[in-house]
Length: 375
Image: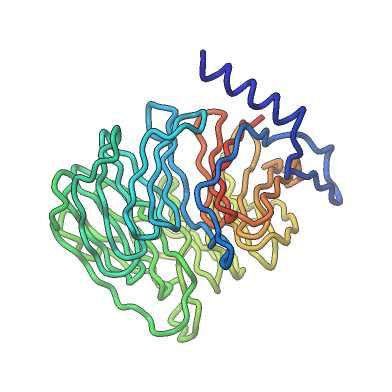
């Protein structure tokens, strides 16, 4: 009750006495704008200097399950744990920039860094338990299954590490292309004993965890093209016996999850995020806008935006929420694409956002952590 009361007072003070960065955008075919993102507080996590601006923040906050605690990493190599009022519970310096979302599992916080460090911290105190050193950068989501941490690096190397000790069980290395690739990489998806993920050469892999990472099937989403930017960076999405994925140049595909056989393809460039909601597939192309497809690949609606690359997507309370690396946050109607609201942080959001209940947390490129109430 005390926290709820404090948040109400902070929100009221913001709305009545402060100037917000938020702005409403009206476009053709749009319904009346409404307030979806209600600012609660913002806190500076990274400061610039007299001679250098704040670097872009690729870290995404996470919520600690069962609590209203936020855990986030920063470009300064710090990991913070905070309560819902923005108060610091603990702060740990890893001295390695953090771009992957922290994974809170039981009493442990798992964090990957761009220097290849995989760290386990105590959830209550932040005390370091162990560190594993990998090759490449950990940029995507980590996954824990049956006491093992699975982590994919930017060098197309997959690690299986013991959750309790940080000891390496096994690893699998895939060929890394010499051409130009897109920043970031696919996160991991688990289906029974199959671990599925995309690689920077345009391939989608399914490996068998019961056989220490033996390849089950491979799908080439770029069809063997020998050029730059072949990445399959969009995290695959499972739905029944189907798998939805995307490559940067050739677009969105539907595959059979048991064989990797392509069922249909929607050609479009620049897709790095996918979202499935109520049997509709959503994605964003920086050049072609926001798209909504049926599960058989038919276009249901499209909305034009010029806000850069989408970094997170989620549907909350029948609002399609999207963050962009150049344009902050927007909210749309997921059924017709009409705009509700845009909140401009002034510097974009290169990491993404995390939602629990009505609360949304995001770390913007200006080094500020924002908390919103979603309405």
